[in-house]
Image 1: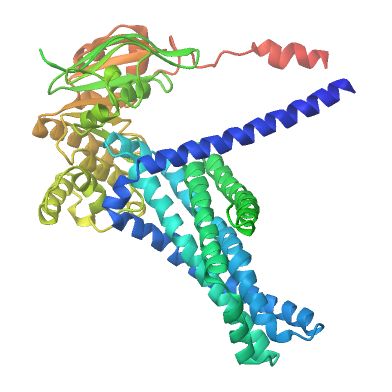
Image 2 (image 1 turned 135 degrees about the vertical axis):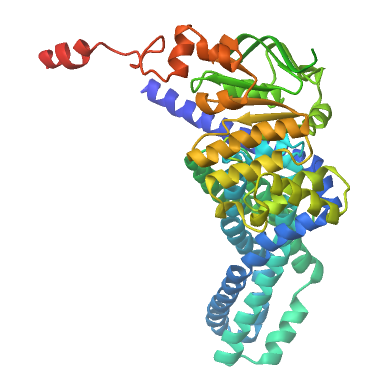
Amino acid sequence: MRGAWGHGLRTVGDTTLSIVGRIGAVVLFLGQILRHSGTSFRRFGLVIREVYFAGVQSLIIILVSGLFVGMVLGLQGFETLQSYGSSESVGVLVALSLMRELGPVVSALLFASRAGSAITAEIGLMKATEQLSAMEMMAVNPLARVVAPRFWGGVISLPLLAVLFAAMGILGGFLVTVVMLGVDSGAFWSQMQAAVDFHHDILNGMIKSLVFGVAVSAIATFEGYEAPPTAEGVSGATTRTVVSSSLAILALDLLLTAFMMKGWN
Amino acid sequence: MIHQVEIRDLNFGYGEQLVLKGINLTVPKGSLVAIMGLSGCGKTTLLRLMGGQLLARQGSVRVAGQELNHMNEAQLYAMRRRVGVLFQFGALFTDLSVFDNVAFQMREHTRLPESMIRDLTLMKLNAVGLRGVQSLMPAELSGGMARRVALARATALDPALILYDEPFTGLDPISLGAIGRLIRQLNDALGATSVLVTHDVQESMKIVDYIYFVSDGVIVAQGTPEEIHASALPFVHQFVWGEADGPLPFHYPGPTLKMDFGDERGQA
């Protein structure tokens, strides 16, 4: 019995140490990326290329998901608010939900699964096929030439995708509640305009998606760079990127929301 | 004689296990030297030590007179600008075209105008006979063509030292002969020094100036191709003539036949 408890405790301890060690390694790796980011800013074309691959190519999934999420929010909100006789406020509910939470969080989750996993797989395969070693032997640092542009591409793309997600969501909410269910269009927009605050809602949402962008891009590049150079290693790293990024997004969201509700003081 | 590469009393290992033990080796300037041995004997590790990808635990590795063990990152990168490496399967950048692969180092390390980079790149591709595939992506090339493009890329900045890691692996006889001739021609035309790690005895015997045989982390024989060909050393003889059994046994050490097929069955 005592042996089983000891074994269980040791497993919990080992797992905790391993998670903390992994987080530490990602933070150190982030430091390395920042140290080698000079090339990315001097040759901004490298970053633009990654914004295209990570951002532009994620547009379809982000826009379609945003539309559906907004439609569902509109439907659910309309039904609940109607029972209180305030169905005109559905625009406020849709906008605030999307700008404060759903826009940054859902777009980050989608970004992690679509672009994050692609970044990990690409860097991991470059490592497995000795492309990173070849670059090092050509006196070109892969951190500066491969990793940093992909990191900054992700950091720039995610806030823009979150804004588009929220915009499409509001459009979806409008289509369902105003066009289909007959909510007054003027009330939908005017109440939304009156309730949404630029600083508390829009800016805070942007800050969240920026932090998520840093986290997802750091995890994705780290997992790719540290992936064992085998097919199994790259596949495992891709899975870890999606799982770790999703958990990091949700944990950071809780922290950021708590800070934002307290007004950062 | 001036040596481009000079290795003295080198020991290197991964963890507790020593892979290279007391290696002494020199590569004279302008020569083409082969390092041969069985898979896992430490040849590629030796090549990586010459390129500074690994650092020696004990002993000295000098390239162009500079001790690699004492270099910082900036010095190491400066040294590598004078070194070209051909990886086993080419290691071409899969997201860049053939042209961009060969032009990569020129764009990274020089301030040459794009028109001049274009001309130099086409000259390099012409030297390996592949000017016509400049717009293709690496995935569209055959194994032999990819190796030739990688060779053009390795010599893009006219390196003083070229390191070849198993350049003949997986090639058909025509591509193999073409790569072999190119390695010799490029070495002589560029006035470079080359080190070739390979299993391919017959092809490398035709092009190299000197051969080192490595077995179990130790240099067991060395000499010119003629000397190696005539060698009576059992290991060299078995390797050069491709004999299945000899000092290196055909059977991997394990339980005796009687133990695997006889006694245990009887007991079961």
